[in-house]
Image 1: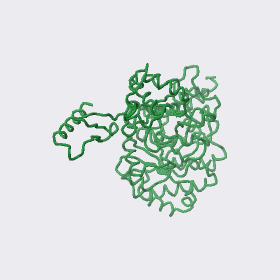
Image 2: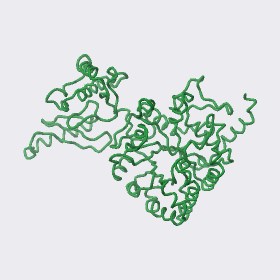
Image 3: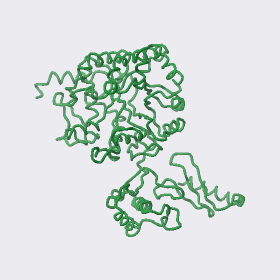
Image 4: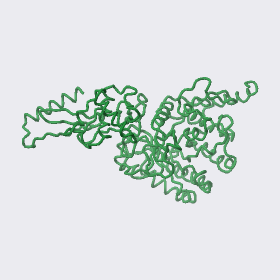
Length: 510
């Protein structure tokens, strides 16, 4: 087989070591996040900007160019890829003046205080609005010209395409673009991207490749997990080994471009991710554990600058889909559960990204809790609670009548406290949050009111008969709430001095 394909292998190996334009000139690859707005109670722009900054996220992609969000991000050190919705393509693709006005309103007032890293015109237009393809190319050209006229030609203009425009992508060496789009749309697009040093934006989802493969794609391969040698994915034409599906999809794009004689356009992954919840019957692999595995491994893969088998020198940057669960999105159950965080800012699941250079400050690896699962058998739950508070030696004193965690007085709330007490006592050891299947690990702090769960970063400290409760999260500004039972005018200077000295001593040593 090797002899039969040797000229082809030689050609592809040579092409693999050609310098892709972006790899030669540009910065290290980054991991960013998409921010959709179909979210109940989406954080106000100022709070959203503070959240992004606190999470040490440096790159975000908006599906529009919301002035309020762009203003709020001024000076935050966050680069923003702004979007042009599909419903604006008619106007922007019909008139250079309209495109220039859009740039004047949506880019110039904010850049460079809020660095605009790219303009993404439309979203998956070949699939979502194919009749607009001629207007899409015109809109790209008009917006690019308007940016150049404003001395901002360094801001690339492109359009996110669905992976479906690439046919026969596995193995990557045989991939090619949909012929009905190739000459009329894709070739002019790629020439424009090459001329303006802009990337080919692609939405790549190994989750869908796995689900639609009906067993042809190994789950571990989709999740960046190493495969045993006998199960490694090998391209029979190039003999290149693919340890993950995402790299294979990227290389399929490079091969498809090469088939149109385009070799200098880099790939930018504008969407990728894994859903954390879905229909149990139709979407059994939409789980928090698999979402955590995919996105954690994705982050490591990109920041390790591993490249792809065909282009080891060029690692594409990616935007994870998405920052928040968009619970208002229609469609399958999984559509509402792609977020790294819930809409209120609490983590949707455990991410394992410690050591990746600070990305996502809310690396929740050390802040997990054990609580009662949402759907449980009542008798099994009661038996698990009895065991935790008995033979399990969990500290269940706080769920006794009159104590801080007695309310709400129901089985699930009491079981959650007992389970977390046992889980923390056991050092979060594997299997310590099982309880015959009625418990689950969560990254959301279940503490409420004066009820502080054992695993919470908040702690109670008693000073001079007063309960001092730390209410800030780790890494946040230090704030305290006091529950004293003493009238303010009865708090003598001596008590206050004791309180302050004790707090300072505790905060230094804790």
